[in-house]
Every structure is written in structure tokens, then in C-alpha cells.
Image (cartoon, rainbow over all chains, first blue to last red; front, side, top):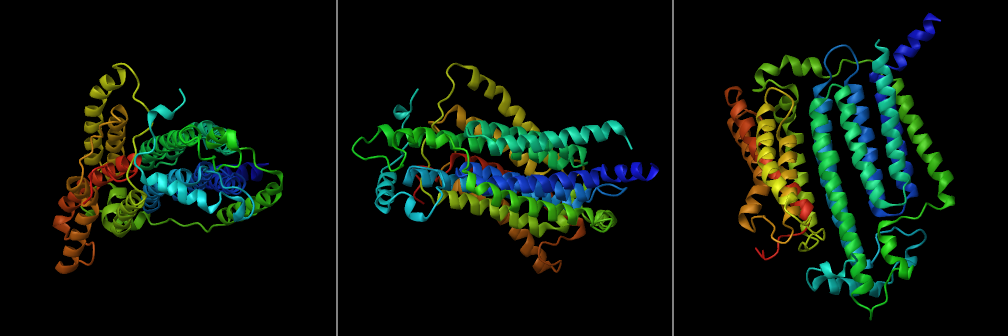
Length: 140
Length: 331
């Protein structure tokens, strides 16, 4: 009985509990990344995977008796800023893709299922024309 | 062991995983984004529990706040592009094979098809299982905390994380600022920005609130920057707070962007990287190695770099939110 309580205490310590949850988040993000098609959802899935990595790092840093490892925390801080930059660039790419092809969905199947090539060139021609999003076109 | 704390951990982690699951499973993109912002705020709570207040500050300001704003404005842009494609040019057939539902398709994602279920589940389970096994059998180690603690007296600051970021591992931070700049250059290379489609809220409430909020945000940002040398805080959190204030300003007046065009904007955006590089090269010439400081000069140099980095990060976050080069700027 005593041994069981000890194992339980060891398992539920933050140094082990949080990295495990981080690994679960990483796997969950991976699952979503594979299954969802909309590119914004895929970016969200990538961000959730990244948060899982941060949780593993910070959880491992908090192990032991003393204060947490500042190097792992500094790396996580760097990672958060890099993640937001990469997300912003990816979102800009999604907006540009939608402007060119008319959809932000990664369609299943071979590439020839996607929009034909002439649609892309026409979209590009239009995108050069000037600021595209005019307020009158929006449904109220 | 404190039973209540364990209960808190379990409830918090279950909430985080549950919100992440709902976010990835929702077919409505707006709902997914709102759940993702909630996810970021819950993560900030988890970082506090893991004794990482710096990360919690950054997560609340950047992970939940700025990323959330970026996602929401992206959804609004997608909606506006779809609406324009559907109604603006009746002579061109919509390229989306679904035709009349193109607008709906923009902000909705149909549930995933059945045939990807088993491969995705297997892959995720294998990767997650291997990760958990590796983490559970990791050898005990004290980490780098004693090493950092032993060298705090030469770092020039009193806060270990700032010491690591701007002295011991300054190279990482330098490259990180470069990545922020490169991401912005990538976004700018896609063309000029168009107007942010979201209209300002009617009435005086938003501008009035902003008039009160922006000074508070500036004072908070400068305080967080200053506090970074001895307490949780620093350039990234301060840059995120100032960037959030800038995004609010942009949102309140989407038609007259308060961004300095051309040279001043570019100087501000590159200030962090440029100053960091200059200081690093000076260290190389003076014999302290690349990005090394003389002990007596460490604190003023770190403060100088942090001020420039705060400015650059704040400007870059606002520019990434606006997305695209400023109009009327052909330099």
C-alpha cells in the first residue's frame, strides 16, 4: 500500500505530469494537422504542437528541488516569439493563396483536383489591380 | 505532497487538452480561433504553476493576445476576399468547385473524411507514446540552474532569465530578432497591404477607451522592460504589450494607419538586430568574443539592446498585423 502511494506521488509530481500532458498535446496537434484540411486549422494544429513542446520543456525545467532551469525557460520564451512570427507569415501566405485561388482549403487527392492553372493567373492579375477588399462587397 | 495542488494540476491539464481537442474538432473557424485564444490563456496559468512567470506573461500577451488578433483579422480578410469573389465579378465563374457555397467554405471546414482516421490516429498514438516513454525514463539531472546561478555576478543583471537571454545565450536572442524581421520581410514580399476589412465600432466608445488605454499600455510596457533586469519581464513581453497597443490603434482607425512610412519605420524595425550586431561585433574587436561584453559594460549594453529590441518587436508585430508593405512607399 505504501509503495503504491509512493508511485502515485512520483507520477503526479508536476515534473512528470506536465511533460506527459505536453506529449499528449503534441500528439493531439499532430492528429489535427493530418486530418483537417482548412489551412487556418492546420496552423492552429501546428501551434498546439508547439505549445506541447513548450510544456515538455518547462515541465522538465521544473523538476527537482531547487528553482527551475532558467535556460529552458529562456529557450521557451524565444520559441514563443518565433512561433508568433512564423504564424503571422503563414497566415499572410494563406490570405495570399485565397486571393489567388479562391479557397484556403487543402483539398484531398492529387494536385489536378485543385483550381486550374488559368484561374491562378487571372487571380494574380486581379491582385495587382489594387487594394482588393472594399467594404461594399461585404454582406452586412 | 499537497492534494489540492495535484487536483488543480489535473483539472487544469484536462481543461487544456479538452480545449485543444474542441478547437481542432470544430467545423466553424471562428469558434476554433476563440477556443485557441482560451487555450493560450489556460497555458499562461500552467506556466505560472510551473514557476515560469516570464513565460506566462509572454504567453498571455503574445500566445493568446497577438496570435488571437492575427487569426481573427485573417478570418475577416478571408471572408472579405470570398465575398468579393462571389459578388464582385459576375462574368468570372468562381474557381471553387463548390460554387454557391464558396463563402461558407471560406470560414467552415467540413468534418474530416473517414479514410484518414485510422492512419492519423495510429501515427499520433505512436509518436505520443514514444514521447511519453522517453520522458518517463529520462535520467535525473539538475539542469543548468547551478551553472547560471554561479555566473550571475558577471551577467550584469539580477534576473536569471534576462541573464540567459541577453548574456549567456545572446546568440539565440540575436537570431530570434532576425527571424521576426525575416517573417515580416516575407509578409511584405507578398505585396502591399489592403485595408483591414473590420470596420471601427460605431460610436465614441472605442476611441474613448483607447485614449485611456494606450497611455496605460505604454507605461506598463516601459515598466515591464525596466523590471526585466531584476524581476520577471523584459524586451519580449514589453514589445508584445506595446505591439498590442499599436494593433488597437490600427483597429480604431483602419483607414488612416498611424504607421510612419518609409525610412523611419524601417529604421525602427531593424534597430534591434542592427544594434545587437554592432554590440556583438564590438565585443569581437575588443576581445570578449562575438556578443560578449566587458563586465563593467554589461548592464548598460543589455539595457540598450533591450530598448532597441522592444521597439523592433512592437513595430514588427503591428506590421505583421497590418500585413503587407505600407502604401505609397516605393523606397
